[in-house]
Structures are given as structure tokens and as C-alpha cells.
Amino acid sequence: MNQVFQALRRAPVWAVAPLCGLAAGLAHPPTGFLPGLLGHAGLLLLCQSAPSLRDAFWRAWLAGTAYFAVSCWWVFEAFQVDAATFGWMAPFAVALLAGGLALFWGLAGLVFRAGRRDNPLTVVWFAGAFASLEWLRGHLLTGFPWNLPGETWRAGGMMSQSASIVGVYGLTWMTLAIAVTPALLVVNPKRRSSWIATGLAALTLASMAGFGAAYLRSAPDHPGRPVTLRIVQANFPEVDRYPDPLYRTMLDRYAALTAQPSSGGAPPQLVFWPEGALPRSIGEILTDGGPARSAITEALSPGQTLVFGGYDVRGSTEKPIFYNSLIAVRRTVDSLAPVGLYDKHRLVPFGEYMPPFLKALGIEHLVPAPGDFDIGPPPAPLGIGPVTIQPLICYESLFPGFTRHGERLSGRRADLIVNLSNDSWFGATSGPLQNFNLSSYRAIEEGLMMVRSTPNGVSAVIDAHGRPADGRSLGLGAMGVVDVAINTVQFDTAYRRYGDGAFAGMLLISLLALGAIALGRRVRA
Image (cartoon, rainbow, N blue to C red; front, side, top):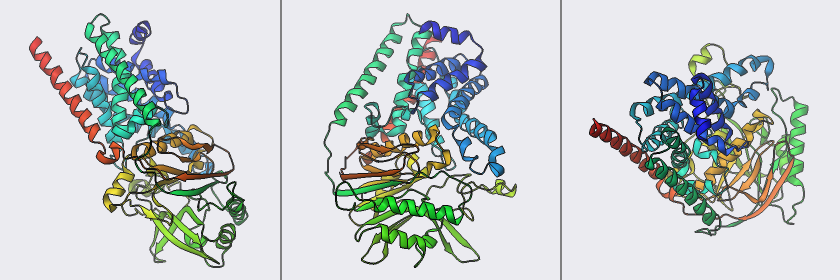
């Protein structure tokens, strides 16, 4: 390993920095090349040896650009839905997204270089500098916390369970501190403290694995409520236009899958369709006497509740207001009755709304709606009959603490997290698979099960440890249903109680490490 790192240090920086970012990006699912985590160690060496703060910034920016290019290349696919209009933007969009997100890495490299020295505590300072900028990436503007380093571990595995204590930002700090420690052996392999630090990192890694193994066998604090569920995945690709014949085909398929007999005998209590299952407004779908309302009514049995996502139009004819919404409707004896409505609170920039300066240039958003979406109220649990759910519509499932925030605002805890997503925009790429992994971390953090419904994968009921319940899911390109009978268990996780408190403590440790480094520098002077 030492020879490899020494060879990399002699290679041109412009070539090595992207290789480090590429390796770290490939460590994430679905690739899962975990040795790629050592790319972070290579980045530490590059920033530490940078002759100036500016050089450290650009080295980290190059690494970040490669990292986000391999993490977010699937954005290219969204522009191919209407290639005639948007296709030319695809390479520029990927480049701008990767380069823009990499600015956070560049700033982290600069901050790290400002305080680095040849000291074992350097790894703690590196973890704090980069983890704090990753936190900022998840919050600045609307935030885009995609593929945080802490989410490198496959959700549901042993290593991911630490998120139940420290959340994914805390797990990011821990992952980075462990991953970069081998760099100490490159800088000074004969120093005893380098070996001690490496041993502590290995011990921490083993402790995380041991905790994860024990936690996966633990019993929930609250057994919850029994409920039967069906997730419908109709497997329709995203297209730029939905003429009536295609719309009718989609409606018929969703209705047929909803109505098919259950393996358990009795019809499932709750049925879930994804975000944007039918490309019409909710008002049109539920119009009395309309084809959609009639098909849904016939597909459901009395007492069943259907939960689906779509855009809702309110306001006046002159000034309509659009929301990306989740609605629940219950089948009565002879009709449908709305029982719950949730409007998306966190919107996707450039997709669900466009910044004014881009609208002035005539650039339109990608989501097929007559106008920009409006922001819904803050999150709150929604009672839909047998259970209380916390809706997360697509992009919202990326944000740690969203469900916890809803509980704090309302004073009620949900029985289930429900994530309706439309990943068909990204086709058969790594995007939907990554999104499934990232969303599953919300179940681990909150100690709640999650229902995840998408048009073409990945759909599943995810247990409170981040694994598909009963090991069942519908992958990319699959059509069918997932029927699961569950008890909506609840774990009283430390993250649910204290949020990012542990992460704040880790950042404090990094600042103390920086102080110790500075103090040691003065003593030697």
C-alpha cells in the first residue's frame, strides 16, 4: 500500500486528484468498491502536501468533481426524456452539477490545509473539515445531500446501523476519520503514533461492525400495529408527452395490479402507488364520473385505502397554485373518500421550480406541470386509518431528520415512513439504486419501517434496520406488486432523540484536535 501511495504522490496532481475522487465515488452502492474509501486518504495527502491554500482548494475540487461525476452521472438520463428540447443541456448539466457540488470539497480542502501539520491528529481535523462542509452541502440553498461519505456503507448492513446513533452526518465523520488514517503510515511509517492511530481506527471499525451485528438482532422498543400492505410497480418509463391512449394504458395497468388477488387471502388494507403514477392532476383523477375514479373504485375493495402521488392545482383560474402532493383515498361501499393530503415541503431546484434568473433566459423546468410548484407546509404525520404515516415525496427522503422534525412540530410519532418517488426520470442507471440506498438510511435513523413506491424500481417495504422486509423488493424494470403483512415496529433510536447532537460533538473534537495541533506547533517553535 505504501508503494502505491508513494507512486501516486509522484504522479501529476491533475491526474491523481480525480483518481482519488473516482475511487471514493465507486465505493458507494451499487458499485460497492469499498477499497475506494482509501481515495479519501489520497486526498488528505494531496491537500497536506499542497504548497498553498489555493492549490489545496483546486486539488480537492478536482477530486470532488470526479466524485460527484461518478455519483450523479445519471442526471444525464433525465434530459433524454425530451431530448429534442433538453438533450443538448445534458453534458453541461452533469458537468455543472459535479463541479458545483465539488466547490464544497474545494472549500473543505482549503480549510483542512490551513490547519494541517505532520501530526496524527490531522486525520481528526480532516474528518471535521470535510464532514462540516458536507453538512453545509445538505443545507445550503435547498440542500443536496446525495451520496454523503457516511452513506458509502450499504443500508441494512452492519456498518450502516451506527446511523441509528449518530445519523449519516456523524457516520460521515467516522467514515472519513477511519478511511484517511492509513495516510499517516505513508507520511511517517516509522512513527509509533501513526501505528497507534491506525490501530484505533481499526478498533473503531470493528466496534461499528460489532454494534451493527448486535443491533440487527435487537428487538424493537414498541411492537407497533399489524397492517397489510401492497406496493404497485407498473413499470412505465418517463416520456415527454402522455396522450390519452397511453394514459388509459397506464390507468388500466395500475388498476389491474391493484385488483389482483392477494396471496394472503384478504385484500391488503393499504395500497401504494408512486409519485406521479398517473400523469394528470389529482383533481382530474378524482373527478366524479371520470375514468380514473371509476377504475380506482372498481379496483379497490370496501375498506381499502389507496395512497398515491400527483400534482394538485388550487387557487384561481387566473392564478393557479401547483403542489406536488400525496393523497390517501378510502374505498367506501360505492365511492371514494379522501382521508389525507400532504403537500411536498422540499422542492427540487431546476426540476420542480426554476430560479428566476434561469426563467428569464427561457429555460423551463423538466417536470411536466403547467407551472412551478409551491412549497407545502412543514412536515407532519398524517393519519390515514389503520396507521399514521410521515410522507416523504421523492427528494425529501435524502434529508436526515425530516421525519424527526415532523414529530417535534406535531407532537406525534408516525407508525410508518412513506416515500413515494418517481425515479423513472433516470431510467436503468445507478440513480434509482443509489436513491434506494440513501432513502433506506431514514428508516435506520428514525427506527421506523418505510414503504417505498416507485414507477419502475426500486420498490419495497424497508424494515427499521434499512433492509427490505421479508427480503422482498421490486428491482429496476420489474412489474408487479409487493404484498407484505407487517407489525409497524418502532425503535427508540438515539438519533431520533438527539438528532445531530453526536455529530456536533464530533465537530467539537475536530476543533480541539486543531487546537492541539496549533499548540504543538507553538511548543516546537
